[in-house]
Image 1 (spheres, rainbow, N blue to C red):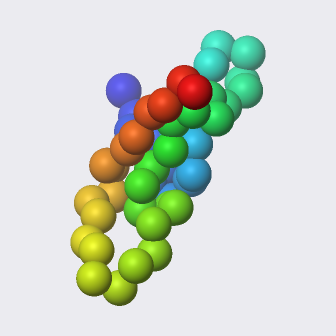
Image 2: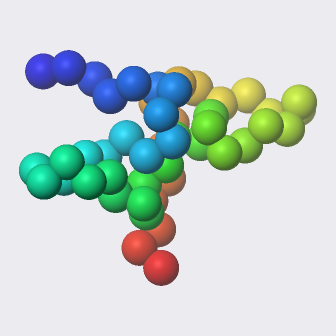
Length: 47
């Protein structure tokens, strides 16, 4: 089993190769200097 690349925005890949736009690694979307986020911290919102 390989882990997803923490430098990608959308880590969840479907069998057809498309990425789930509802799942993001937070370190790729939050860049506030006072917030520290781990490499594999993610958020999912289907809405």
